[in-house]
Amino acid sequence: MRAAMIALVTAFAAAAHASPADDLAHGRDSFYRKDFNRAIDTLDPLLYPREQLASPQDLIDAYTMLGAALYEVGRRAEARDQFQKVLQLEPGKTLDTLLFSSGVIRMFDDTKADIEAQRKRDETEREIQRKAEEAQKYIESLRVYETHPYYVNFVPFGAGQFQDHRIGKGILVAAGEVATGGASAGIWLYLVGKYGLESRNVPLASASTVRTLQQVEIATGLGFLGFYAYGVIDSLLHYKPRAQIQGDESLLPADLKPAKPKKTSMLDHLHLAPMLSPTSVGIGLAWEN
Image (tube, rainbow, N blue to C red):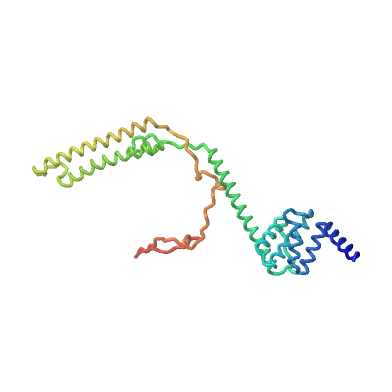
């Protein structure tokens, strides 16, 4: 009885003083014997909540066997997590078909492919971001000037204001000229069409109406000239032979211009195009790569 007690105490003492390397060996033995639950119970404490193994290769082996054991007992999501840890430590690792089942190898390879695809996406996004930042810095460094022709100051419909990029004022002048000039021209065309250029055929009963229309025609014509004069004077007061403007993507060198999005659907490649022949005209369907 005493001998049995001594043996039990000795066993507990040995277990209490077992090193992480010993536990790894026990976990490996359980895994190779396909005792996956015992392998999990042995390997998990070596890795969580804190890694107990100092050797990188031991860590890789422990994560690999733990992931494979979790897969074999149906804990697939947890298995993928372990495989991700393995591939962080050794991105090019492959599994031996003699030691691991086809299902484990398939999940490991799928995880590896997913990580590689994500790495490429991250690299692409970083490259796009880098180019965008370089392009923005390049545009901000540009000193771009546009020339303002002097004659544009005398062009109606707010041309001078639009040339100075004073869009609101240009719209105001253009709208005033269109409203007054259009009304005056419309009345004139109506009277000429109905009574001729000299209005000699105006019936006496319509004389008062025609006179009123002529007065409105003159007033709106003067209004047009007023808006035009205002637009010219305002444009001359603000005129600058050239002005600095903000650069844009059209000025970027080829290596900094954003890539055009690739056509991905069939509709992106199909285009309608006119088709001409000596005897007919039609529409054809064209395919563009």
